[in-house]
Every structure is written in C-alpha cells, then in structure tokens.
Image 1 (tube, rainbow, N blue to C red):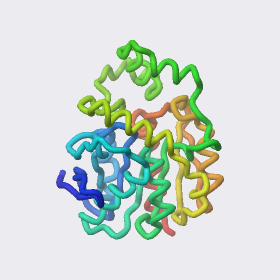
Image 2: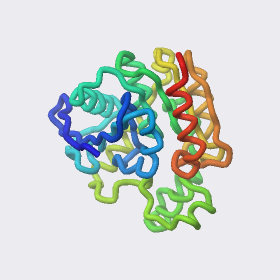
Image 3: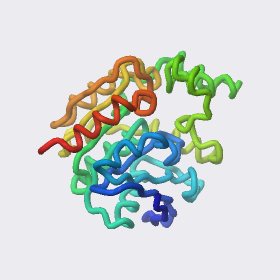
Image 4: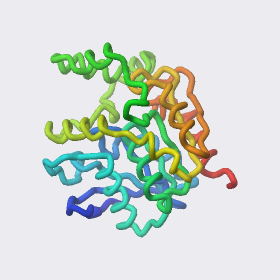
Length: 262
C-alpha cells in the first residue's frame, strides 16, 4: 500500500492510501471511520481496479480541526485526494456516510465520477426513511459498552458476530477525538441530496442489505428512483455491513457493474 497526504482547500491534510493496479476505484467509508473500514474487502477489487481510500478529517492520520464538518467538506477532501494523485476521473464506491459523500461528489462534479456505487446509504433530509426511535435510544444509552454491542448487532448478523468476536473495523475510529466524532454526526445528519440526485449523470448501482435497521432498506429504492441511470441490488439477510459479511456476494456484484461494457 502506498500512502501520502493531500491538502484540502482549507489547508487540512488528508491521509490517503492507494493499493493495486488498474483504473482507480475511490472507496468512501462510513461515518467516524478510517480507511480500515475496507480492511479485508478492498483486495476483492484488485484484479481489475486500483483502490484509493482516505481517512476522513477528524480520523486516522488526517488532521483533526475542531471546526464544523459537512458532507460538502468531505467532498472537497475527496477531490483533493484525486487531485494529489493526478486522477481526473474514477469509479466511486461509497457506503453509509461515504455514500452520502459520493452522491454529492457525483452530482456536483460529474467529470470526476465514471461509475457510481452507493451502498447502505440514504438521500437524507425529510424524504429519507429514518431508523426507528428504538434504535436511536439503544445507540444513545449511557452504558457505552451496551451501546457498542447494539452497534455491532446493527452491522452484522448474530451468526457472524458469534464467529467473529472482533474488534470490528466498521464501528468507528477508537482514537478519534470526541469533538470530531460529534462533528461527523452533525455532518451526516444534515445531509439532504434529494434535489441533487437527478443531476447524477453516472451510471449507478445501489446496494443494500434487506435487514438493515441502521439505515432502512427503503432508502435504496428512494435513491434509485431519483437517479436517472440507477439500478438496485438487495442482499438478502444482510445488515449494515453487508459489504464485509456478505463480501462473496457484494464484491462480485460491484465488479460486474464496474466492468460491464457501456
């Protein structure tokens, strides 16, 4: 893996990682996570693509300014990484909050996105289907150990958790400052791309697990209904981290989409 730093327009240094060979695939992780979100998954793409990832500002090796964060700011960070690597256009695969970032990147900068994959994500705003209040209460409970267990159960099925006791790379950057974690949450919660989605010109695949309660599955159909050239593929029985637990299905689905003739 090759690593380096890009400089965002506001001067923030963004740590990036590049691996494999072939046309670039930009991987965008979930909220409050680093590039390790993709550990054990990214190599599935290296037969046909090189993978590019980065640590969101506030996480990992990137700078952690205590200023307001937004999806628009994450988009600028992504563009800075592509610019630093001399990549004019890439395939983009964004999951969860990374899918929110990918939506805005593709809508506002169509020249930078060749094909788009949106996984376990939401359009945000009043049109989105939000997680239930029971889920919100369970995640916000003061017993942080119990809350962490709830989060893991939202990400993975009981069978997977029994066979894989952790630690899990998808449940947040443990070294992230509390202020940055809060700013990630606000950025994600303020996302509303409903009016932008029809502007996405890239051919798009929307992936989602059928048993995702963290980000309800109905959002996949809402997104695909707003993007002109979009299709939906649901993974039966999968929860939020479908791409890891069901990688034998998800990885090939993404590659089939990215490599099929235009």
